[in-house]
Image (cartoon, one colour):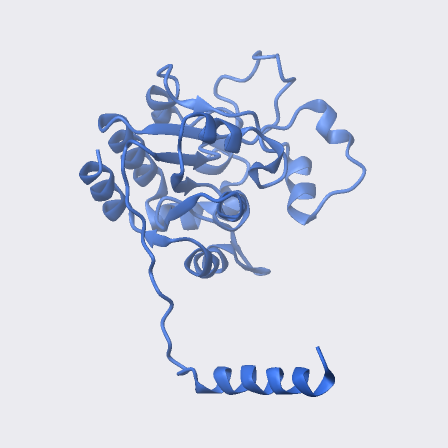
Length: 247
C-alpha cells in the first residue's frame, strides 16, 4: 500500500471509530439449541473448587456461594440428562510427573504448591475417591452413568492439551453450552479454543465462579470476555429452558 493510501485508510478508520456511539451495545447472536448437535460441556466439577474442604475454596468460595454455582451446575446436568443431550466433562488432574515442570505461570505455580487436583498417577485410583481431584459427590450420578464423556485431563487451562475437541467432533457436536470452573481460567480458555475451532458456544454465567482477590476479580474479567466472544451468555434458568425446548 502506498504511503498516501495508508494515511487515507487510517483516517477512514478513525472517522468510523469516532462516529460510533459511546453507548453502543454488543449484538447477541444467540444459538439454536438442539439435542441433535448441542452438548453440555462442564470444566472441573471437582472438590478442590466446589467443596468447602477443597484447597481453592478460600479464594473461590465467595463467588461460588454468591452465584449458587453448585446447585446451578446440577440443574444443567439434570436437564441435559433428562432431555438426552450429550454431556462432556473436561477435568483437571496433576500427576507426579507434572510437578517436574521447569517453569509455570502464576496460577500454575499456586496450584502445584497447594497440591490442587493431585493424583498419584494416570492409572492409579488409590486415594482418588473423595480427594480434591474427585467429582463433587452430588454430580457423581450424572458423570458416572456410563454415558457422560470424560475427556483426558487438560493440563493448564484450555482443551488444547486434551481430547475434548476430538470427542465433540466424533459425536457430531457443533454447538456447546459451557459451564464449570473456574470462570476466567479453564472455562474462559475452553470457550476461546472452542470458538477458534469453529464451534458455537454459549456460556452459563451463574454456573461458574472465580477467585476474587486483591490482585483482581476473576469473575468480572471472565464475564466481560464471555460477552465479547461467545454467541451469548445465559443464566442457568435460560439455559435449562433452552435445553428443554430443543430436545
